Picture 1: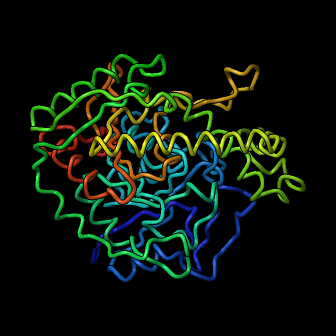
Picture 2: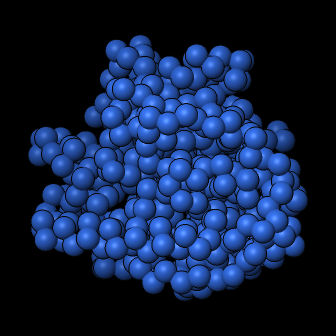
Length: 397
């Protein structure tokens, strides 16, 4: 990656460079050490171009404390979260590639909404030393790039065992570019029924994903639908973990500096502080059951496909009041949580545009350790469709 300019999500430590986590609470925090992924990028010759904005502490989908990144396809539209700045900067050609972090979809959603590629690696493939925590068992650093090949190059540079992070795998890092040969004949592809045929998926999004599945079949893959009923409840399961664990991580600030948090985090962290232990334990049990079902599906299928987001990007708006159970979640349409709950790799690649002229993302997931297979299918699809060649209007200025 010699000379390649990279944007870095401001959740990742950079030595002697301010690292805020998107929060005013850490507005003046300057780490004494680089995160391992930063050290790896420097060793690979990359140029650290700058830090990219994010939602506060990366544990909310929309609330930004240092202004709101704009979507290059429409500057009045959200770039997604939490890695919003990385998604916007990469789509707008402000950097060649970038790093994001994904706990519940925070790499894949900005990639989908900004019309680019975002990979959540399997848990343990990339070191998290120097990453501000969200949910310990789901946080993962990965690339947000304009092409699958760029994402493969970036992952190769940052992945690998790290003694500073005992959760990393002590296994060799493959040369991911070798998987990008375009041949997917005979691969078994399952379309995850519960995450496609849903009231939370707009017709334009469903049509784009169905067309993408047809393209995969034309390229020689064996494509059929598969059902994992618990996947329909992945957002609720992940929601409990995403409420409780950040509240525990930041309990002192919740107690002493609550009003320094943004709107969504004030609500979310207070709620997480009050969730009963029984509810958290139930969420963990359901997570284990869902993971078993996902791993069982991967014994039949090489990859699973579905939308990344059930909706195209939404307009930027002020934080709304929470007045009912229905308004307590701002992201019920996300299709990403099944794979952070199962510790599996998943990538979002552009698969078309909806009726509002905004990008749609196809999500491709593989078993733990299956990044090569995910890259293989994503690259074959990408190279046989025009979507990765499209440039947003702001990139033409």
